[in-house]
Image 1 (cartoon, rainbow, N blue to C red):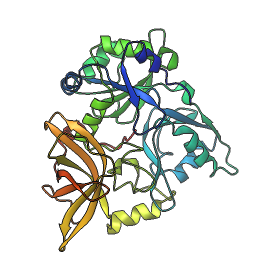
Image 2 (image 1 turned 60 degrees about the horizontal axis):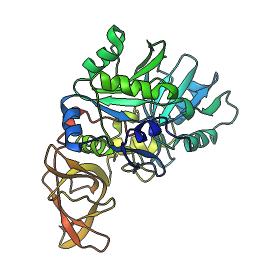
Image 3 (image 1 turned 135 degrees about the vertical axis):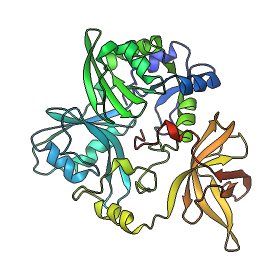
Length: 369
């Protein structure tokens, strides 16, 4: 595993570090200071998140577009250079094996993956490689992005880039000149951006964004923001046991696209329904952390049954209490439905009630990394 380019940068400044829950073995900043101050600065201004440990797979060759288009769940061939999308590689049974952000360059494609996932994605794609004229390469060592999220994004980017910042559609990108070098700017969604100046300049970019007014935020605030928005995290809320519709990843696959791996199952779910569970936001009646895989228990047809499973917990400053993301079984997904939180022995550990995501206006989108 390559050392994330900003890890020592943070460590030498006394930043608190912790292992990423979605990527065992990868450390990241837990917090940069006072967590409530970080959170409120992110809500009113702009959060700066260290995602420089993301991986990347690059595909080159004259058959690259055709190869990816027949495998991936979202469009590829219709994308022009400078555009991209959230995308998935599914199993033949239609479940999520890999999620990533795809961008198209003039001569190649880049797939930005969650930390630690690039080698296995490259290997999975290679298994479908027969006679196509393509080259698959793990280029994670040259990929060192950071992310911005918040309502003052335009002001921050204007201070960083001046008049250079283009208007970009979601998942579009541009390479811009920056301080004698190049900076890639990717629009992930409304008020969410990914910036990459390369590993050697990651620290310089981080400091420049702080100077421009962004607030460094660690994993605690990252999880508060995403759980409040109902946004799934790859490796925690999304794995090979989940259909994309269950995790709210509708923007990462296309129903108007031709055949791809798992397409028949995805199309049947859209046409006939039949999802057994869906990822929802639930408010907890206490502020103690709720362990992943905690069960949701409720009386159903005269029996106390397991009707859901917790995948993420975060403290919600918006609600002044705990929130969880959990997969809840159908017929029990109405807002206001309440469940007991049960441990592995079935003992109650409080209650959780389905609510509307308090941060939904800050964008629920298909980006899970």
